Image (tube, rainbow, N blue to C red; front, side):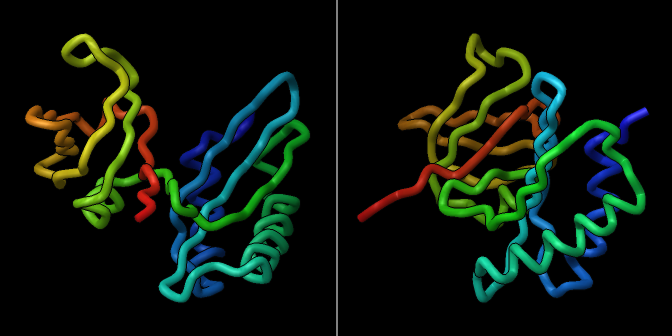
Amino acid sequence: MAASTAQIQELISPIVIDLGFEFWGLEYQTQSGAALLRVFIESPDGISVDDCAKVSREVSLLLDVEDPIRSEYRLEVSSPGMSRPFFTLDQYSRYSGFFVKIKLRFAFEGRRQFKGLLAGVENDEVLIRDGEDEYSLPFEAIDKGSMIPQFE
């Protein structure tokens, strides 16, 4: 049986941390037999191509030994970038004041898609301000969330 995203994350995150980076998150997608494992790493100094290569080598060795993904897969390691995806409530709270887009797993007030100013986090809800409207979106209902890059 193939490992879940949470199990893969549990394997990979200690390696990333041991290499001196913050484990930002991962995406695991399977499409027509082939899988994509995308690992996001972060650092206060930014992320270089060499950083990605170093993490990729170590993660690849670990995955070869542990073999959590039974099918053929492609490994990508990168920084979260300007349109960084969010994986945790802490990440949302760290980027309060920035513009974000959020897609929910199910409709809330007739909508699944929200864009607006990230007003913060309260309890287990992400607060989005869209003009005069403010929405409290339950974190467990969020399918995907990411920053919207702003250019001056």
